Image 1 (tube, rainbow, N blue to C red):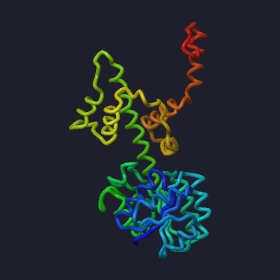
Image 2: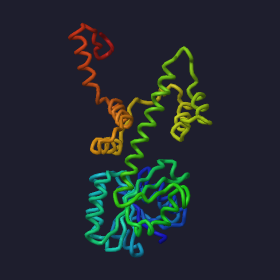
Image 3: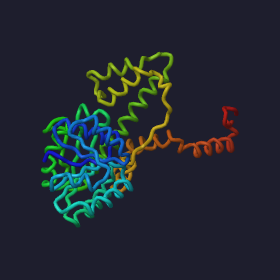
Image 4: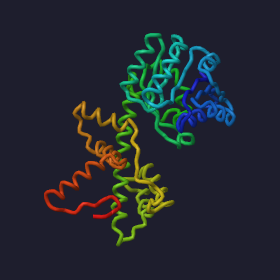
Amino acid sequence: MNQLALIGLGRMGGNMARRLARAGIAVAVHNRTYEVAQQLAAEEANIEAYARFEDMLAGLERPRIVWLMLPAGGATDGTLDVLAPLLDAGDLVVNGANAYYRDSLAQAARLAEKGIDFVDAGVSGGVWGLANGYALMLGGSAQGIARLRQVIAALAPAADQGWVHCGPVGSGHYAKMVHNGIEYGMMQALAEGFALLEAKREFAFDLAAVGEAWRVGSVVRSWLLDLTVAALGKDPRMESVEPFVADSGEGRWTVLEAVEHGVPAPVMTQALYARFASQGRGDFGNKLLAMMRKGFGGHAVKQEGGHE
């Protein structure tokens, strides 16, 4: 196998196509905005852009491999609605985007009715994956994983490192879901720690210097710490950044699974709630709390604009 189709050329999908092409794999690409696919094909050898699924699939040797990198939910399901009738028994679909593992189970069952194999792939690496490779968490049959070995070797940091066949369909996205929950907790702990250092103004901490010392030999050294120190070096007080933190679906799914299984996950849960708070979702409750304090204790309430 030295070719596949890749649908969805966002921050992850585009760079994954580049890494595959540079490893000698022919990549047929499709994107909702066709100009994005055309630009990628113009920049990279071994990449060809297609506006229509029919044309893209016709150019692939059978059995075919189609790798999806689309937003979870409607975007992926809608694409499968169009793709499924165009695929044949023996073809393989890989969902490599962030997705709820329960959706992956449903997608696999749906495709299995036509004899189409399915692999769910949790992919981590972000914008650095092009240079460093991607961590891959794969769920599916042994046969399906075997068919992907050349693709796995090209995407992973090394042919025998940075990837795992987690188990049956659904297990790859389940592992990635938990991975992202852990990521939320680690990021929150680093953010809170540096916020506490920054608040101790009389010590005038050089936050980047403290972080740099932690990066070497400390038990909290990590890639996330590396990124934190780099950011502090550019903007020590984060004055150019709005305090709004988006949450991907996977943080929510992790917390829901923890509740369903009765597994305590307070760190991941609180990290998710902290993101909600940054988005202003706690504003009404905080306003109400202020009014309660005024009601029973006569405490002053700050009005919009900073007045009391």
